[in-house]
Image (cartoon, rainbow, N blue to C red; front, side):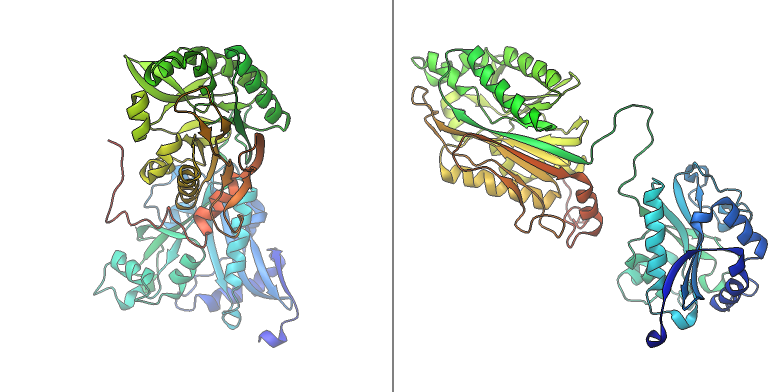
Amino acid sequence: MIENIENIELQFLTLDDYKELKEVMIEAYSNMPDSYWKESHIESLIDKFPEGQVVIKINDELAGCALSIIVDYNKFDEHHTYKELTGTYTFDTHNDKGDVLYGIDIFIKSEYRGLRLGRRLYDYRKELCEKLNLRGIAFGGRIPNYHKYAELLSPKEYIEKVKRKEIHDPVLNFQISNDFHPSKILKGYLEGDEASNEFAVLLEWDNIYYKKQTTKAATKKKVVRLGLIQWQMRLYKNLKELMQQAEYFVDAVSGYRSDFALFPEFFNAPLMADNNHLPESEAIRELAKHTPEIVQKFSELAISYNINIITGSMPEIKNGLLYNVGYLCRRDGTIDRYEKLHVTPDEAKVWGLQGGSQLKTFDTDCGKIGILICYDSEFPELSRLLADEGMDILFIPFLTDTQNGYSRVRHCAQARAIENECYVAIAGSVGNLPKVHNMDIQFAQSMVFTPCDFSFPANGIKAEATTNTEMILIADCDIDLLRELNQFGSVRNLRDRRKDIFNLKKL
């Protein structure tokens, strides 16, 4: 048969196809007498939703067909029947303003089975769903082999065995292989379907590109541009001079239309030089007095330069205790605070820093983000919790003095990108501060990491700065690629977790 194929074409169904369509339907449902659609049914479908009715023709002969409507899915009970869904076969349930593409029928002429024509029809439905911005596809899938096992297995047990390849069900196997996932068992779904004992499996496919309609003028961006600041440690006369340098970098990354500016951990440490005569624990508390003014200035810069600023981190005193904190200053004027949860032995010993207790994602006009400060990146549980909340980009401001310290942050950050299917941006400081105790030298190479799969760089590195050089790094991150990875990746680290044997949650 394949040798004789000269042309395969996908076309919209027309009434001129009906005679041939009827013959194919009768053959396809030979075990269900009189199950074919009448001409009036086909005419109604074409009139209501022409884009949803397509056929595949081989050498101008009808080889397969797919019929569908759009429904307002919330109006139907989760245990609906085929009759209810189709409005007693009138298709009056079709709603151009609905949110789900519902599959009415799909069948292939027997002599053309094995050519993956069904996959072409399913792919068309998926593309149509994306084009119309519907949230997904649903349909009741028959399980025609179930009657052979009905006395031994419940429908649920049968489906589990099919999924484990212990039982072969050509219909259900095919649908699962085309990325449809079983949602629930529908009892009494299709009248007269004795082969399935009138059971069906509600199969669903989620449109990862779906955008819920909103009355707001703003939309979330698909491609997010990051601006990383690799900060040179140098002495400054005062806070004003330091913030002039910070504004220079904000101006620079904003000039490239970046959505985020990321500063390093303790980028304001040079201001401790004036208090170098004090013990380190007292000098850093003096530095903490500048934090409110710095946050206010960054918020003003975020608004005036139209960019979201992640302020790296700064010391802050709260209830007499010293913390390492940072702020997300959004371009809409709102501000959020984040804390370093794990302090290093040196930070606790020399400065008396305390670990924070707040871990959460942050909503932005570019989607959900997470922020972990330096050492926190080396604890995988934290980023996994953020990923469970929907994080797309993880920002890690860091400060490391030696190359081995940097390597810990760098390699852990890259692991976070792979295991959480997200982008990870790290930014650090370079240079020397000879007049600030415990801050003598810095080593850094700022980078943007990605998962490792076909749509991403093979080595998982989107962009990297020059080691130990003051500069900015600009990188674009396509959020839609993360959605595709989650659904269709070579491996699916988030979806394939064994939640049946372990659980991770916040206290």
